[in-house]
Length: 131
Image (cartoon, rainbow, N blue to C red; front, side):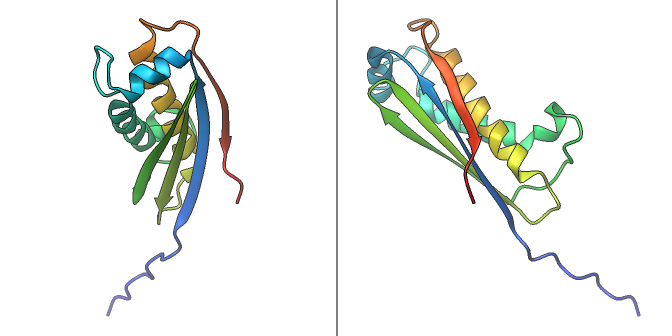
């Protein structure tokens, strides 16, 4: 009789964050959903999830894997949007790279959707969360 290989129950997790700084007027328009392109944070969330899932296509040497959970949180401030992405997987995967990619894709999406009204925006402080 064939033995079933053990199921990997270890969940790998990673969190990353970054910040998009902008003019206070831009942040206010995001909060009020007043931009012509629509719900900036909603679109950025979808883009981040897509980015995390496609990390292996974008970065050489990252292994393709099944990600079990991807969440993206936004912290809207007076002149910035903070982004935090959380990724979990039971695969032998690069969850750290998926979390970093999710953050950066969300930031790029925010930049793209707001660039018509604010060319002074910048993206920075991309980092893995400690622990």
